[in-house]
Image (cartoon, rainbow, N blue to C red; front, side, top):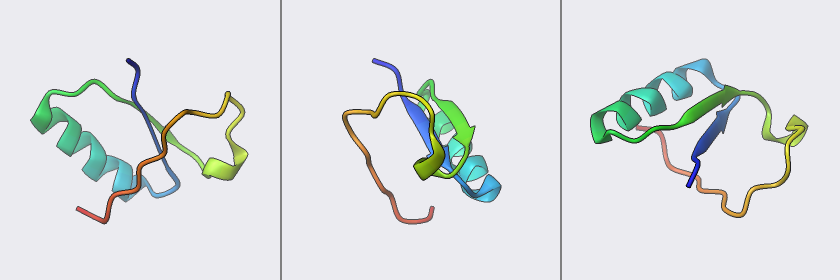
Length: 51
């Protein structure tokens, strides 16, 4: 399974990277507006409140 995290905010990506590192999860992080993504839609979108 591949995990990709997308967020427009650099600060939220920084927090997400920290959380992924703490849990030992490999994640590809992309700073972008999700409405402008050019790759295929993904089967799951998960929103989490700010950490």
